[in-house]
Image (cartoon, rainbow, N blue to C red; front, side):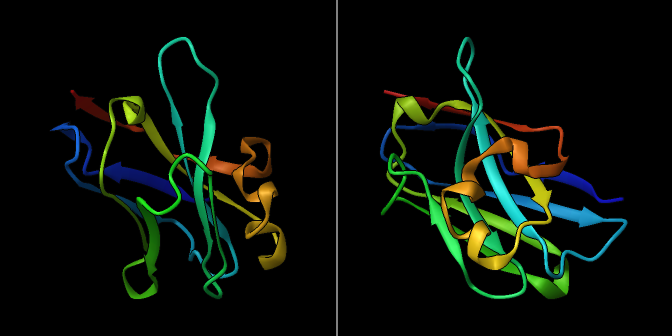
Length: 130
């Protein structure tokens, strides 16, 4: 079992930055794919970015490429999502998730599909005002 707790959400003006954290407990994150997802009211959950913990493979949604960076600190069992140049359309509940994808799949579009992930955090709200 893996327990995931997100933090770092909040309200920011357009153009601003936030860093989300996802702390894991109950199991090591080694050899797991860690993903960040978001869901805005009335919309489907979408994959934002993922990283393979055993290496450096990453994947990003087109909408966040060049603005968001996913990273991990294995010693702290924590994954981060640095969000820069935020836009109002980035406003959503953000979730982290853990899955058992292989590295090559984690770094592919599969790494952005929520059905591939087994463990989920409770979410943290991000609101970007114009």
